Every structure is written in C-alpha cells, then in structure tokens.
Image (cartoon, rainbow, N blue to C red; front, top):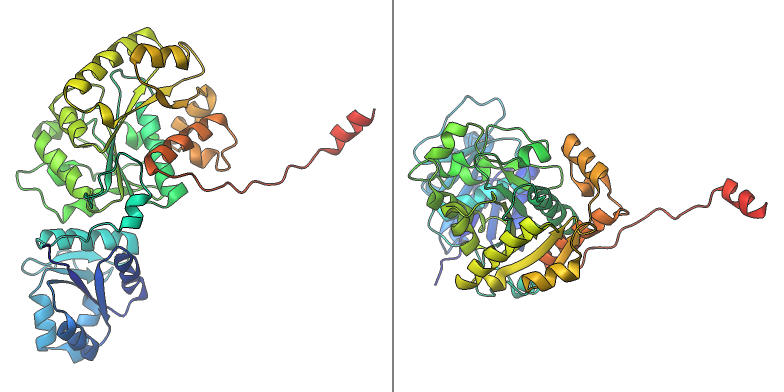
Length: 404
C-alpha cells in the first residue's frame, strides 16, 4: 500500500501558501504554518511520511531559533525557498532550494519531484478524472497520459501538430501539459514556439544517475500554459543521452503532468521504439501522397506485429489536397481519426512568428484551427469549450448595395 505523503508548508508568503490549494485538489494533503505554534501543531498532526517547504525568510525569524520543531522539519526531505537577493548556493546537506518569486504551478511541480525523490507515491487520479479521458486510457494508471506524435516521413507537419496539440490542451482545457522534443539532433519545437533556453532534456537524462529535482527545473514555460522540454542546445551532448534514461525521464514526468505530448523524429531507432511502446496513444501523421502512404502502411504492419495497433489514431495532414480521405483510409485499412487542411500562408506566418494557430486565431474561425482543436478533443477525450465570438454586424454599405 503506497504511503500518502503530507506536505508541510512553512511560510507567510501568500504566493507560496497558495500552492496548497492545487495540491489538495490532486489528493495531496497539505498543512501550512506561519508561526512556531502552527508548525508544532502541524507536526503533531502529521501521521504519515512528510516533506517540507521552508521559506528561509520565515525561518530566520528569531522566534524559531534552535527550536526542536524547526529541527524536525529540517530532518525531512526539504525544499528551501530563498529570497531573490540571497547568495548563490546556500544549500545545506541534502536540501533542495528555489529562489523566490516562484509561481504556484512551478512550485507544485517542485514539490511533486520532492515527494518522488523521498520514495513516496503521488496519489492516484480520481475516478472522475479518468472518466474525462479518451477510451485508450488505462484506468489503473495514475500517471498522466503519454501521447507520441509520430510520422514515417519528415516534412509531414508532425511538429506543428504536436506544438498546437500541447498549446490547445493547456489553453482550451487548462490541463497540466508537457511538450517534449524527442528529436534530439534536429528538433525545432523551440523555433516553432519562439523559446530559447539553455535548459533541456540533457539536464534530466544526460547523466548515469538522473536527478529527480531537475525535472521541473529543466522545462521552459510557454505562453499557452504548457511546459516544454527542449532538445539539447549543444549537438555534442546528444551522444551522451542514453535512450533508456530519456524514456525513464518521460515516465517520471507523467507523475507531474496530466498529459505529456512527445514529438518524435521520423525514424524507428531505439529511442522512438521505446517511446512508442510506452505511449498511451500514438498520433500517426500522414500526408496524402503515395510515398508517405507506402511507408505508413509498412509502419502499420510493424505496429500490428508489435501489438500496438490499438493505440494508433491516424491524422491526415493537408487533407484538402492529394489522395482523398476515403481512398487513403481504404488503402491503409484504418479510418482517419482527424484531418487537418492546408493553410499555407497562415501556417507560414505562425512558424515565422514563433506562435501557435490557437494564439493567431483565438476564436477558431479558420478551418485549420478548428481541425487542430478536433485533435485536442480527441486526446483530451472531451469536447472543447464553446468560443465566445463577437456578434456579426452588417456593414451599412452592404445594406445600401442590396437596396440599390
């Protein structure tokens, strides 16, 4: 029986204590304290295994000096919150630290990583949460869903679909979503989303003994609300990443996020095969041309032999050109789950501006944005919320033309 963790939060900062609301909504018990007496009471009522969040500014209060309760707090797995102007690395022992200000969402991820590092289990998802997901979910898996976006051919628009899928999951449904660039050599999610950072997947899987504390620190936030794990900025560091370590890191991220979206390279190397095997769902992107169709059919044959066919959802990109949807479905022997029309100029503008279609077309008037929203619905397992649109107003000139 997994031990349910208790998070003790010692702070007077409302931005810090606010994290308890989101953690308790996920089934994680939190106790907050802003005084020595409250801390003593919280420690006395903590019956299970605990982890602590200690605001260094409060701990420096003379009333806490040399108190046994504070010493007990420091003896457990601890995340210390430092003031913005505190000196560099002031950690002591095995303490982990973060510098304020830190947003509640980032702090929640740091606390979850602390729980996992302590050898404790995160609570299982509630039955209601499972009911919201698609039919491919496994009801006994409390981790987030892992959707792998794959194509047998480069240039299929796979990365664009993955980026917009993650942005849509976060912005349309407010789901905790992580987008992962698994094209370690030539991934371009950073370019597509206008993100530049030295933080990358190398930080969490570039060593023999990956650091769980690095999980929330390695991701980069995006304006949509999604987090992004970029490919390593230095190509020379890619060779140091072992596929097994990368897949293990993704598996750990599933304990921190509701949905993990992985954009793969167009190859069947060891890393991609492991990711496809671990996936809850595989979005297989195909374009309506004979070359892509032929190799997609080969992949589907391989997936059937590997027992992965039931996880595949076929996405037809540029669906308004080339081979029509009915003929393509018949040739591949499976239905097209979603189609995405071509919108060359609009897509090119989005790529050049480093933004998503949902940001460019927030009211989802364009067909391509509606198609991408349908993919978000498929993965989320529920319908998208309605869009509030401005009422259409007729032009007086149009009325005059009709009258004439």
